Length: 66
Image 1 (cartoon, one colour):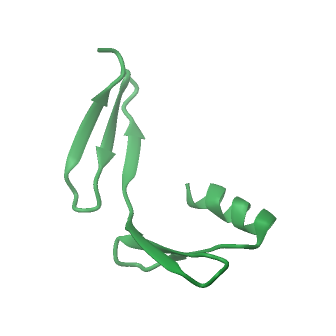
Image 2 (spheres, rainbow, N blue to C red):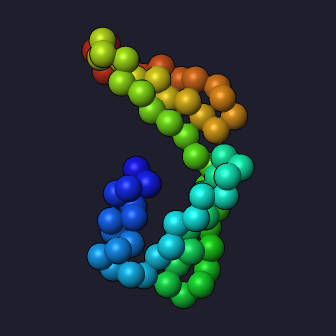
Image 3 (cartoon, rainbow, N blue to C red):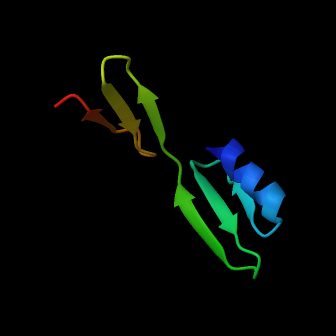
């Protein structure tokens, strides 16, 4: 995801994405306003389910076969 956002940033040169190294990222908009959001992760389990890991470490399983 970060790579995709970096690609958009490079193309548009209007935003900056900063990894705060604390489980969050900050998006700095072209006008200087900032929005911080918690990072999360999603993993394909190979059986039609995905595990979404919240920033706090808790997992949610998403079943696309149900």
